[in-house]
Amino acid sequence: MSRVRVPGPLAGRDFRLLYTSTVVSGLGDWLDQVALLVLVTTVWHGGAGGLALVVAASMLPLLATPFLAVLVDRRQSRRVLILTDLVQAGLTLGLVVAPGVYWAAGLVLVRSALGSVGGLAGQIQLRVSVPPDRVQAATVLLQTAMQSVKILGPALGGLLVAFMSPRAVFAANACTFLVGVITARALRTTSSPSPNADLHYFKELGEGFRHVFGSRLLRSLLFVMCSLMFVVFLYDSMAALIVPALGMGTSYIGYMVSAVGLGGVAGSLLMGRFAAHLRPFLTMAGSVLAIGCIIGVIGFTIVRDIRIDSAMWLCVIFLLGIASAGILVTFPSVVHSETPVELTGRVWALMNSVPAVLNVLAPVLAAALVAWIGLGSLLLLAGAALLLTAAVVAVRLGGVPPTAPPSGADDGAGPAEEPEPGPAPLNSGAPHRETRAPHVKGAGSSTEEITMADKIDKLAEAGFSLTDATDAQQAVLKSLTEDEVNVLLSVKSRVEAAGSDVEGHSLSDPSGGYLW
View 1 (cartoon, rainbow, N blue to C red):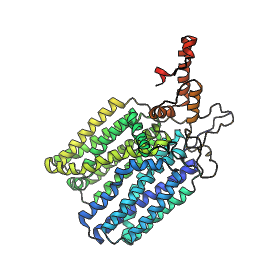
View 2: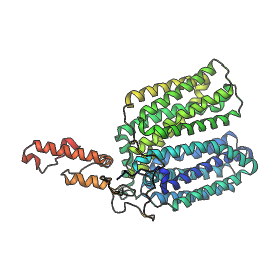
View 3: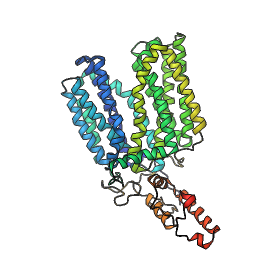
View 4: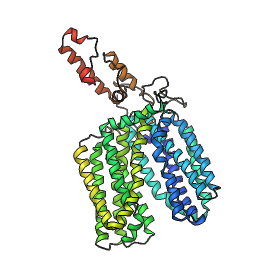
């Protein structure tokens, strides 16, 4: 019989719901941001201090995300999404009646913390809503949507503020959270609580750290993202100074944001077409190289006081957006490919929060460097640092293979296979099973997906002693593919065949030097 064609991520009902919720929520966030800035500066006259307070309140919860992630992994992702969106809707309505900057900052602080928790649950829900070989394609779709919202959101937010009061915009954003509640309630699949939920809190917290720092790829990716985001925030925080330094009016700041967003959409579409065939770190190195060259050119132009037409600069910034897609798509693809589902919350939180700490420090250093060496020199320095980062990534990590196997079918082909109705966890009572619907063997199919429990059982039946395996070793076993398990068993049988009967049936752990 002909091979069943694999549908794209949007063909699945649950991912369509998650996608819809993410887009609506992202649009609401942009509306909210514009309204909040107007309220702080023009209604409450909070000035720079008020703006700094509100921005700090939105950023600080990122530092606590790794500690909240343990609680997220202990709960069903569907329930976490419903609860966080519902409470955020109430907090957003609180902004409608907030009497001043300090009240608003407090509401934003709590809402941002809940938003971080909901974001972690969304990443877990992504893993259980699509098959493993479609996670990268789903990531590309979400990234493309968020870049599109980045173009539409600020413009729509400004338009609504012009015709409505900022407080009315908050009410509109509260409705977007209610959309999230409705879509989350309609989800048919959900993750199961962490199989180690009965462990001590700090032991569970340590599992995430051990997994990240025990994985060469995740450890390398974390280092690269810390270096990269720190350098990016050095110049990005000075955007309000860069635009006039290039001879453009302040209105071009908004045009620049839109140009970056439009470039991000184009870049994400390109990544969606070719990402599955590209080496992730080599792609990232190419993106960083392009960004470094563009930032260096901008710095050189400012230093030499060269005047270029504003339309040309918009084209350059558009290219900057295209280049950034290689990083924005590669990062989540690598994280998901290297992380078991049950650790997704803790790993995702750690991979995002550590660079966020450096992002808080970068603007302070940038201001000091501008006062010391000038804006143009700062950009030249940042461009050189990006070029060096690109070279190191290409040399040290360029050989890492693609994170997901290329699909042999068109994304839009074939009907989506729907899971059974009902919000109950799919892996209840099976602590090592994947938290998604099992693969159904089609007519004429000769393969069947191997689950985490199958891997453990298969190795145990072959004589491997797994009772003393560390958490890191268990994580390695869970990430093995069926082919890798079969190779491991084949090596074991061949080694035993080469020894005596006594050696082959020893009561000691036969895995010894070639499993651990």
